[in-house]
Length: 93
Image (cartoon, rainbow, N blue to C red):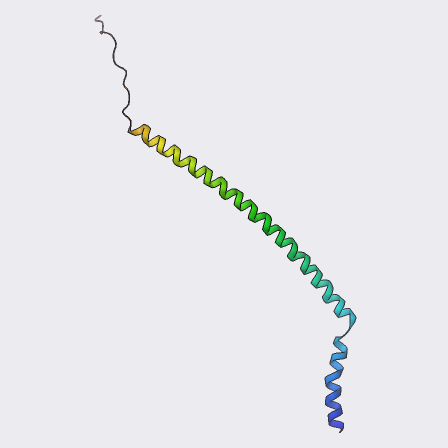
């Protein structure tokens, strides 16, 4: 009988020690801090996603403008150069 009481005491005593309100309060405080950190990280993530979307749009516009200028430069290079014709006779000195 004493052996069973010893086993029961060993099983119950650690449970009583873990139920301290200090540890529970510390765990709650830590969980609140982590929750606030997670919320701020989510907000920052959304702001960064918005910024990335804006930059992707700007990049698309710049790429389009670059391609248009590239085509215009190729067309200008392919067109024959206009040489001014000599309008008069050369004078002999």
